[in-house]
Every structure is written in structure tokens, then in C-alpha cells.
Amino acid sequence: MAKVEIYTTALCPYCSRAKLLLGRKGVEYTEYDAPHGTTEREDAIRRSGGRTTVPQIFIGDQPIGGCDDLFALDRGGKLDALLQAA
Image (cartoon, rainbow, N blue to C red):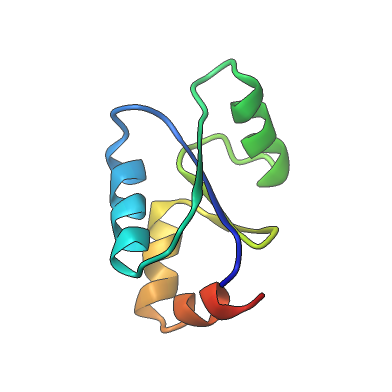
């Protein structure tokens, strides 16, 4: 299974939805708490090509985007293939 990383903040409903979908799929992921002004947030912005919102999700080293992007991949039948890639 591919390495999955997600940058989140506390009380973020989109972060919770994204983690719920990953959990339903049995995906283990590394979560980074990334409130404004932290090194983790700066890492998320840099890695995502400038996106400033949370969550920011990475499968392998590929930036996926946020919660809506993750759900769109799933609806389109592309998420499982990304998760299976090594």
C-alpha cells in the first residue's frame, strides 16, 4: 500500500471527512497537525504547490489535494488504484 500523509487542523470538518474515508478503506496514514504559522503548515503549502487549505493529502509523494479531491478520486474509481501503488 502506498504511503499516505494528511495535514490537518483541529475541528476541521473536511479533515474529519477525509480521515473517515481513508479509515473506511482500511488505509493507514500519517497525520500532521498543521495550524497556521507552524512548520507543518509551511511543509503542506510547499509540498502541495502553494495550496493553503486543509486537509492536504499526499499519496506516495503525489499531492492529491483536499477532501473534495479525495472524494472525487473515489467516486471516479481512481482512489483504490492510487492507494495500491507502491
